[in-house]
Length: 110
Image (cartoon, rainbow, N blue to C red):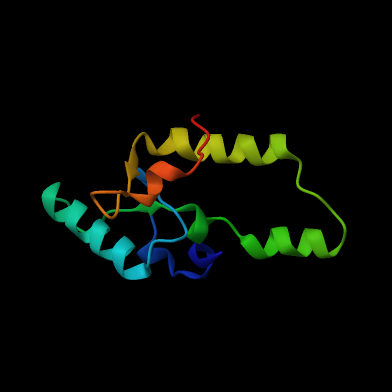
């Protein structure tokens, strides 16, 4: 995962989980997080966000599929649920404001 490649000086325990959709651009995600830090009076260099696309190693899933292996859903659910609970907060990215893509997707509530 991307998070695995970071130097540990740039990592820390996440205090929020970003809930988003793949359709959002990198610019939208980054701008939203910066604004959230500013409005919450948080230091963006000391605020850690858990985002599944960056913290889950998608290549491991692809490797398993290539080897005709599957990931047990209960294992995935347990790991994902623990991440959601450990952050204590969910930050939902709603864009565009008048018709956010986020509200059109199905998401499991843990």
